[in-house]
Amino acid sequence: MKKDRLVPMLFSVIKGYSREQFFKDLIAGVIVAIIALPLSIALALASGVGPEEGIYTAIVAGFLISLFGGSKVQIAGPTAAFATIVAGIVARNGMEGLMLATIFAGILLILMGILRMGSLIHYIPYTITTGFTAGIAVTILIGQLKDFFGITIPKGTPTIETMDKLMAVVRNFGTMNAQALLVGVICVAVLIVWPYVPKIGAIVPGSLIAVFVGIGMVSGLGMHANTIGDLYTISNKLPSLHAVNFSWDAMRNAASNGFTIAVLAAIESLLSCVVADSMINSQHRSNMELIAQGIGNIGSALFGGIPATGAIARTAANIKNGGRTPIAGMVHAVVLILVLIVLMPYAALIPMPTIAAILFLVAYNMCGWRTFVHLCKTAPKSDIIVLVTTFALTVCFDLVIAIGVGMVLSCLLLMKRMAEETCVTGWKEFESEEDPDNIEHKNVPDHVSVYEISGPMFFGAAERIAEISLMDTTKVLIIRMRAVPAVDATALHSLENLYNECKAKNVQMIFSHINKQPFHSMEKAGFVDRIGRDNFCKHIDDALKRAEVLTKNEKKN
Image (cartoon, rainbow, N blue to C red):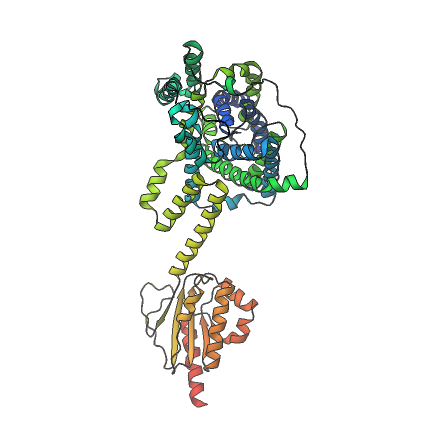
């Protein structure tokens, strides 16, 4: 099964599909739908939209991504990673702006898949993904403090940015509602304890139990706390097609948000696929998955939903309950349609502290604090700098700035590290038992200088070539490059400067053991012809013999 095939995984697995597997997928799909229900509502509210938008996303995007996806078991829907981004877009540009940004992101994702860019996601450093994931978790937690503590924030208070939300909570903490806090604390306790209940705890999701407990405390016991119905109008209508106001100015304004959504959707979905592959010993089709994510996000936007991506927790639940084909994800979407029609009006009874409690646990599970601490203790200093910087920028600013700065910083630190590994050393006699060329003992003729360059020669290390010094007695300069895998234009320019210096001092250059890429670059630039092809030797022995001949000829002349 080729990893890069642009064929939906459903088309491949359906050939040998059995009745037994269908029942397993059916059961897994129903269970995942039960898990997705409270999460979809909670994540929609955290994203600044109504609860039904979360269900629409899980239905439309979940179905389309399973239908066209490149994974056997991926479950898609609204995820915590998008919550703060979507909330910011909605606050600034409204639902129309979010729709355009999501469609733009969908188009980008489809193009990324068609252009076979799935493998490029692996070039995003682990420190960046860990940093922004932990940062998103913190922003979700801060965003839920208001509802968890039942704090009243005056209208007009800026609460779009994470730091604004935190300051608003701190300044208005005196309005805390003790009964709302009690509801929230008990729901958190239920979420923590429920998984340890024998037998049933592993089957029924704790978030569903927390919802029932919260409703019981507020509606049954009469405790005072805001509910979803107090803040939002609940609808059980099926998702309907929305008209989109396409214009050049509108799409241009949505482009930056769309790019952020596309990059995050690609990272999240492919990471989820990798985790799923390890659980079922399979291999996903990354490029097809990107195309499916694009189709799913466009569909979600057109039917009133929000951005979607692969959900690791729901995908893992699907696998654990026997789901092994995309049919399970499609069943999960169909079950959510039935839930939307029958049960959605009752969502108005869910207390906001309960929603906050569910999102607290979501934030805790996604933050990966153990990994974060482990990296801080064991990683190189440069990686720690990238990790902490990405985390801080995600919390204090936004994900676009965090990923952008993190990538630039990673590249700069990588180039610095590579430059430090590149060295230029000169030698008169060289002896090593471990030398791959089996050099036992080399005598360098008089008036010959030999330098060995190790490591990639690129713009960050090009200045090391200046360390090569020519003595007044030097007639031949040998540069050994067996440990140089690649050169770039800057390094080649430095070699040309060295050649000009040698030419001015009547010193002949000889190169030993040039690898394929460096030689091709030198040849393309005309450098090989200027030096003379006879002066490019395969082995250091050949270079030394060539140098000896040249020095003898020099003496005769």
